[in-house]
Image (cartoon, rainbow, N blue to C red; front, side):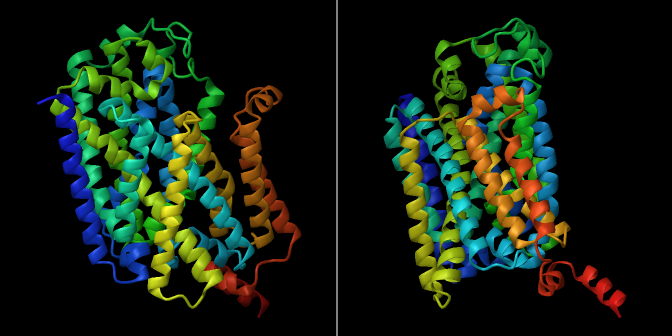
Length: 501
């Protein structure tokens, strides 16, 4: 039996299992709460696996290993710092969100910033625009995986697998997403460990790998010994920029917040993120090691140097036994699809719950809300498929751009919204719009910005503008009404009432 037949058979089995889980989710979805937040019934271990699945993406399985293949150790401190800070903040705010009992990030923003229209509409526009960019990255990963391994055309790969994901999300909502993600997490965690063991068998441990890559140079990393130096390949400013963009993106991502709202209680939410982060750390360590080891195993393959995202695909095609290659291919698809599904559901929630049910038709029935979410999921997924088919951008940097947009648009409104009673709706709107717009402009005119700023990353100005506008505009506008203090800062309101008495 040929390698291609074996891999297609394994992918067929994987796809069948995903569809069955989606169907079971559909059978158990009886209400809006079931569809959007799984009836708030997600437990610790299922939630931890679902979070890990949502976090691990095309950038992880493809771009992360490719980056390590080209730059070596320099990617490690950036990701270590970013993940540690971002996960820690998410663990705290996740418990806060669950305690509030909201469905979505936009629910929180409109309640905390006491504006049911302007805040809701702007937040929906910003979130949907970022989600489309994020989904494009994932669909690009799908195209690369199936094109390189199966020979199926890039465009056909994007369309076929994209439709499969959209199908099971539309069928079962959050229940289907959580349980398919649990299954997918098990697959790609096992695959990451398997890849690492394969690399160890062929390249040895760190000291052996370092001795091989010590003199490696390439057009993307021209400094001799650069792969052993934490900042020789990327430079300190780039590493700091990547770390800050990802660290602020993690607690600002709507799908993580929606997952927190799906748990049984605030304690489960916090423990879910803690356990999920711990497990996912092991996954990334395995991938990071494998990416560096791959350089020692295959050397500087010109086609891989030109497109580092394909390093794992090259090894699957040329080094791995067929059964193992088929398993790892399924795991790569699982890593990508498990991120796509939760982002698609979040987009459908934004369109149905945040826009349709709250602004257009407040009297919408449950069936109407679910129907709008289903249609919205299809539309957003379709736009992302079209965007990915164009292959206009690099996966890693496009993923980092979407992360920077989340942080600049929502990080400070979320954090100060919970911690600073004086933050006002005018400050929030100015901060989010300003942060989003400046990040887009700084990215579009990246070279001009870097030249003018002396190398400060393009992700910084959006965050700086966001915090300055939030604080300054809030101080220049009237305080939030008492009902906001009552809901979010009851202790402060109590102290104020005692003092006035």
